[in-house]
Length: 141
Image (cartoon, rainbow, N blue to C red):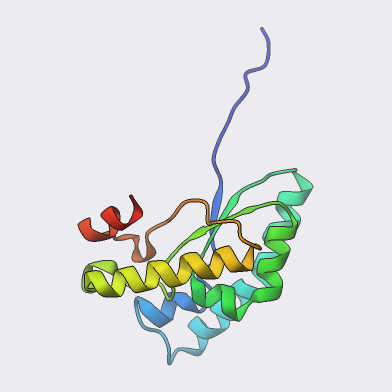
């Protein structure tokens, strides 16, 4: 019997310090800050090394704040041939935001990623805070 081909989708969220900026707090926790800084600097490099070892291409969903805070690591993601997708700016909860706020964040992050990639638009979106609003879903259409 021939071997079966197994396909899967792998994605990575680079929340780094954006996770505590916009979602659950933690801005006064040295553990959260340390973990976020480690994820953005060391963690990204380790993930890239792992994906390179096994010849895996994936999509990194990166909040705008992480893109601005860790530009060198994010350039490494693009240089390695991975995609970058939208993940909010600071891991904010879209349900707690007005349509105008959601629009401003989506526009800002779309432009950030597109400019960062030399005109290439983001590929996909993972809802920050694992929440989405009806208005936010309509913005994506």
